[in-house]
Length: 255
Image (tube, rainbow, N blue to C red; front, side):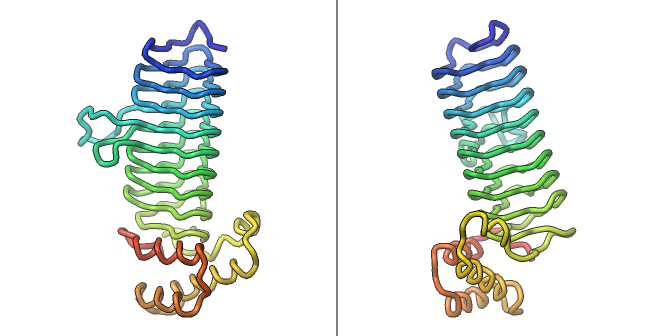
């Protein structure tokens, strides 16, 4: 299962039933779990931690040092969970002193050419399209769908269950359950198709819609709009998530 043409540092820890193709480079201080497939010409560099059942395609580079001039060789990691598909030429840099680690959760699809910069935290169940680029310390919550060619400014947060149109660029946060698109990027309604596919009830979808109708269309400042949401929309974990996301936004939400 391990090609004789691959290089594996003696210090690397490799789990069971791992397939490693020719010309793969695996550095020291690397831990790889069970049942992974690492295809030819992939590079797994110092500080990488890879879980179980992942497929890593040719040309992917995991654990390269950050593209951040403040990085001075500190001990950091790039941590990949389980059952991810990491396609050709994806780059996942390890963390800096800011957070110490870059994290990609479980069951994600990162398509060709995606860049995951230092200290980014990607949740689980996400799909990220070709050539999308995440700057440092971006956070993507679970079950987000990000189309191709999207540019994310550092420190931005993307909420769960969103759909982001291809080719967008943004420097503000994108709250959960919505569609974001156009140029400049804007709120385009809730992700009703995605929510139905995830078995959200019609009542819950209506409540989410009403919450965003107040936030975006009431003409009130954000704090007043959120207070109205609390008064008028039945509370659930999803509505609480919207409120906490918007209240906690450091960069402000897209309009």
